[in-house]
Image (cartoon, rainbow, N blue to C red; front, side):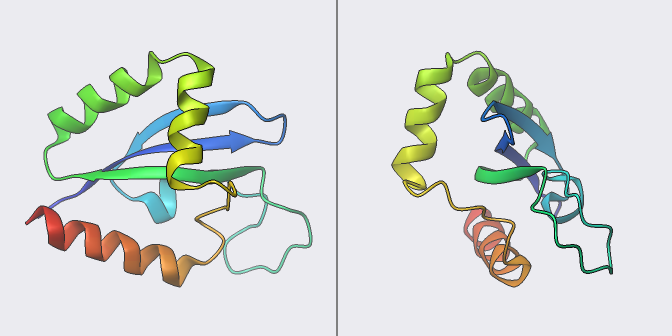
Length: 107
């Protein structure tokens, strides 16, 4: 079964953006590192929040819903589940584990 992810990222300027992808590990926040290379620069954006869906239409509706929120409400969502604004993509193994668990719960 295919999964779709609605995610919230924060760029270096502190602007929150909402996105939708079918592969969070590849299409999530853009990184300054090139795949397979060690790079000293920090990522260009941080993955702060994501939700998993098995239905693409439901994911698109949720993305549009969250994208319509004011910045303050979006910040409150992130702070509720990720109060430290930890970059969830920093540890790819942990992110993959979380994605797998979410996918299992959706089935």
